[in-house]
Image (tube, rainbow, N blue to C red):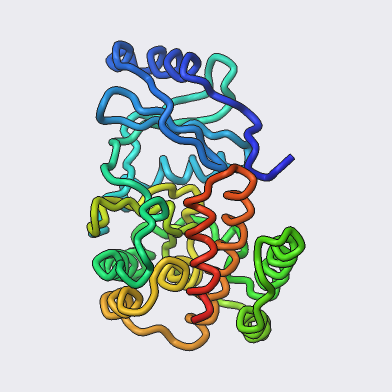
Length: 301
């Protein structure tokens, strides 16, 4: 079974029953399918709320972290994030916690087709956002109790081996052309020592999780990998979604990166692009696949 297939499926009827049963004040609002990702099924409730239900057990610890932390995190950040307002409990055969948050406007950056070089406003906003998120003060105030990099994204020997395997699968399927520059990047990253970073992290920051309206960033969503660890994990977006003047705008707002951080960030960007490309091919999402192919090139340049 592909790693993104659901273990539990919530349909609109069950979603409505759960929401109406625990939040009677919302019972008369329409419940409409909105989106589904690897870890959550999302419904729009009325015009102003999105409710997220985990699809797989592995996502449940992340949902619990979102419920516990996002409300405390939001006031410190310069961009909107989803703040759980309605927290639901297991019921009606659904085994896990779930929640509703205000619907943030915009569309995923990944769906826009906007060239990486033409995202300067996005780059500047994300650089400022990550400068705030990664601040030591925020780590001291909010980071307590968050797990350290549970997906081992900054563990370079592990990450490099995983990335090589993913790229090999794509090459075997004719979906990626073996590239010497990418292998050179991975060779260098494999020599990096363990990271000791302890910043608060989004943990899975790529273009699908950045909402935009035009060239304005309207929100950062999907915080299920919220953790503490090396800032390079989030900084990968500078190399997997931005290029040229857009990356320069990001770095001007965020601040310069040392060589090891940049190498980790580039490697993580390659990993994310390879994994998402496999997902996009399997799920027949051509706009996601196109973005991922561009990201595989941008990450090494």
